[in-house]
Image (cartoon, rainbow over all chains, first blue to last red; front, side, top):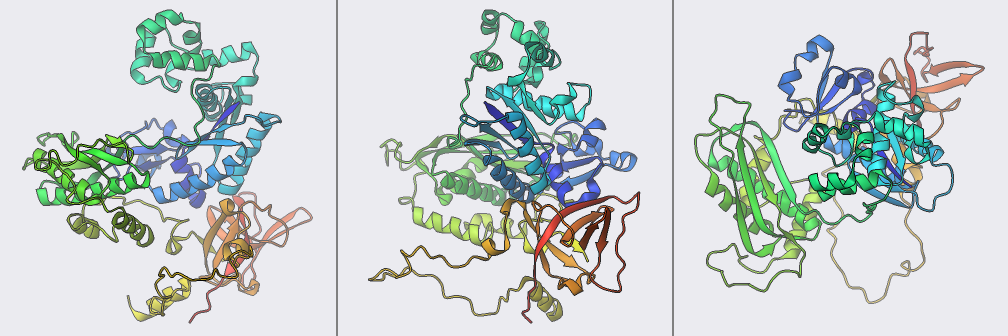
Amino acid sequence: MLALVDVNNMYVSCERVFKPRLAGRPVVVLSNNDGACIARSNEAKDLGITMAQPWFQVRHLQRSAGLIALSANFELYGDMSGRMMTLAAEYAPRQEIYSIDECFLDFDGVRGDLVEIGRDLRATVLRCTGLPTSVGLAPTKTLAKLANHVAKTAERKPGSYPSGLAQVCHLGRMSRHALDEVMRATPVGDVWGIGRQMSARLNEGGVHTVFDLLSADVATLRRQFSVVLEKTLLELRGTPCLEVDDAPAPNQQILCSRSFGEPVTELPALCEMISQFASRVAEKLRHQHSLAASVQVFISTSPYRRHDRQYSPRATTPLIRPSADTRVLIAAALRALAAIYRPGFNYVKAGVLLVDLRQPGSTQGELGLFAEEAEVEPEPVRPSLMSAVDALNQRFGRNAVAVASAVRQARTARHDSKRERMSPRYTTRLDELPRARA
Amino acid sequence: MDESSASHRLARTGRNPTAPTAPPRASVVIGFGSPADDSGITRLDLNDILIRNGQATFLMRIVGSAMRDAGIDADDIAVVDRSITPAHGQVVIAVVDRDFVCRRLHMQGGELRLCACDATVADIVPQEETELEIWGVVTTAIKSLVV
């Protein structure tokens, strides 16, 4: 039996642990340029604020509805996530950390009443960290996700599901009738793996609820939809197709992108930022012991600045010899930037993306063939230099050591995200501890 | 930063950037293993001594002097464990009307009070409309004595 444990409104819940004043009030957390709502308290959801809604569209609710907006404080959320994950891991032999606020637990071999165990887990995480969680229990990952959705919705919207399913919901322990009722009450778009487009197409075909989907003809579905839907269907029927993976594969792509505090038009400023992003992706790349075979760069204007001319190009520089060397990746990224940059545009976002990742040792022996035209390393990679750079940055803070083209931006932080409303990093900085009156 | 605020900061963090630091670590080859290597002995670690449940432990900065007779002064760091069940006589962090307050918990005969440890400060006796929650139990106060 599997469980999906998930923190309710994670980012808002983390803020509330250290800011009791936020309890019961509508709260949103904004993305790192204060541009969009990336987390909402239940009260904010009740105001009709949707996920990823631009901040300027809901800003007026500050005055009219007492809405409170905070800038994302990922240092805090990361630490709180680590606490929750460690506590949850003690309840089952295997854990897959699926995202910052959710993990799968595999209870294979665990004896006892899993609903009781789930309630104990929930109570322990709440007592130790202050974070409210929901626990969904079921025999497959897709069903565990669904069970979690039911547990959460039953608590937030009384009447949506039977109240006994709130907080901890075990779909594997229900009567046929009760299970059918749950499936009838759940829109097909709430199922993990069924996106908005597929959900719209299913609706057109008369499939609205999970119950409809389960009653549909498999052969017809297979003809109309991908094999992915077939897997989802099997999982919904209780046949596991997705394993709990406690050692996730290395990331297949690595991205560092950011929206700027204010628009940027000049090439030198973009070069600084792209260099900095390339340094960051190189660091992540080395962290997972991979090499990149190409470097993609994108820059973008803002569709919200309606009077601006729009231009959002991207370009990829291939590397003949895959590399994880910061200097090589920066050089490749800057070459891509030079190819796409046009003056006279107000750029508000840029990023560096590595997609073609390789494991060391799997590279082809085509060294030097295209030496003149390609981004071949000037000399063999120096893993020791790069690990020294990583170690220094780990110890003294990001950008303690950087390649020169990334420096000016890093030190002046002119284009760093706005983050005007960020709370203190309560658990990771000694000079930002929460204060208690005595 | 002026001098007074610099020394204030030192007192709070207990760290002195001008003090001589440990020599940089170098890799040294020694002919014989250290006799302590295989004995299974490890140096005492303050984390083990001060923290019982790491996932439930948070640090808080004390502001004000109402706990001074309990040995807790302004700028001390309170080690707060949320996993401990609050009991009579323990020093706790309470949320009183949505603010963190450090007090000694009095919980006897069905009566609940938050007692200051300073004769000049009145106890907090929750009224009907008071919102009160015990956030965690203070297990240790860390006080820097460096001047």
